[in-house]
Length: 366
Image 1 (spheres, rainbow, N blue to C red):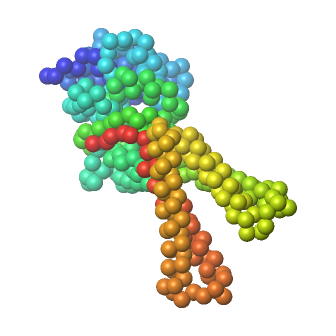
Image 2: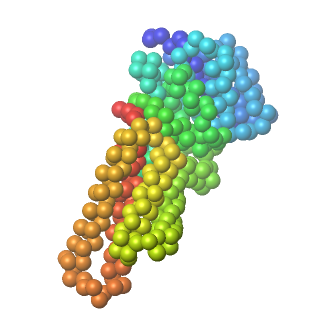
Image 3: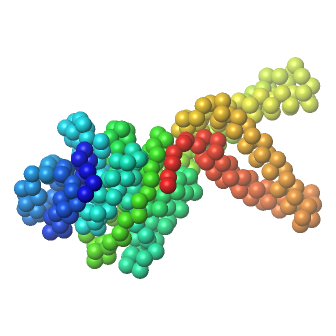
């Protein structure tokens, strides 16, 4: 059996049953020698499972006096690991409901050891034994991740994650105490340029996942609002840029009205307003929306190229549709509707292009 020394298992648990002991037995069977078990404020009637688990010398038991959430339990274990295992190379997180087989846990841990990449144990949601709720939820979340974050992740809800020590020090500072923390961890991979791989694992659902503490509505909203925050901030940035563009144009037109003739006044006012609003939009998107680590010069060049492409595309699409359907200048309302539709489509295209190219941080996923 391959060496798993230096890799600790992190196992958060709330109100466990006998499956927790089966998980620990499986981990020990497959060679793990350090298990950090966190009791996240479980009820008194469930405490004997923790007491039994703690009889194993390989198990370090930590307690929350009250339930604080899975994210808080993970961070408690991460902090303890970083403070008490100075020579260890990383951790692998496992759920306590016996859905992660010991062999799969070992495979993810060893892959992390070999590559020094954060490793996600991903399930196959096309299998017949996967509950409809889980299959649909993961497909939707994966699609939202791909569209709004620009990350391709096969299993966004996996709790089996092998994390190198250096990455753990970053991820331990990520915001969130409940299920949203695991989503924030994935978002942080892109923000910090952390490379990650995927390893296929068994797809196990016991009693259609009835033991899960995941609340479909409340916890789904916590997750999706984090992912959609990118698009919301992008929209706010664009609206503020439009306000700045208009305000600068009006101010310059007023200040220069007695100095320049009308054509020159209009040209200067529009040009200066557009430059200032574009600079604001660029730095806002770079620092606040996409949190890019690329050099400003590279990003600005890409931003300028995209702006030109979007402008040309706007003209080509708008006037192309007018010509294709024979929409004359007298059909003002219809022309206005088409203009809005084209601008909306290009707004989304610009978001995707800025996310995946202009401000794209480097990361890998295999």
